[in-house]
Length: 125
Image 1 (spheres, helix red, strand yellow):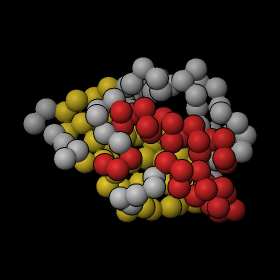
Image 2: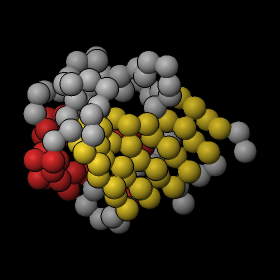
Image 3: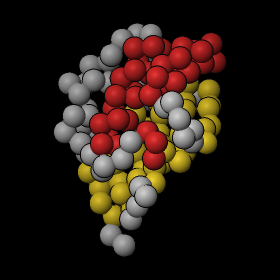
Image 4: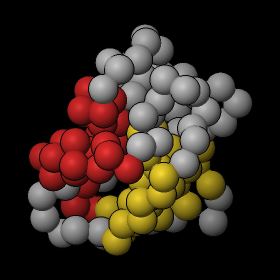
């Protein structure tokens, strides 16, 4: 089965990789950070960055005809354990049912300005 690889127009252009890879009915979405489509950071706080992350994920999912209900796995990278409640409050507005498995790790990210990065795997019916 051939892989479909692309970058949706309404997500900040990926430097050196693709945001979305579709392999059959499985969708892999690269880690999304709080960058708006113009490349600027959505804000300095966990809430604004998390909201942008989920807007980016929504755009990526929509580009292949998927929604948050199609998620199988969510991997969350936070830079500060104390940001977990703020992250979860925003996440719960986007993923409201058909909960996927989730892993959360506290790590350093590609920029000191990033507070959160989220990658997902979805499966289309």
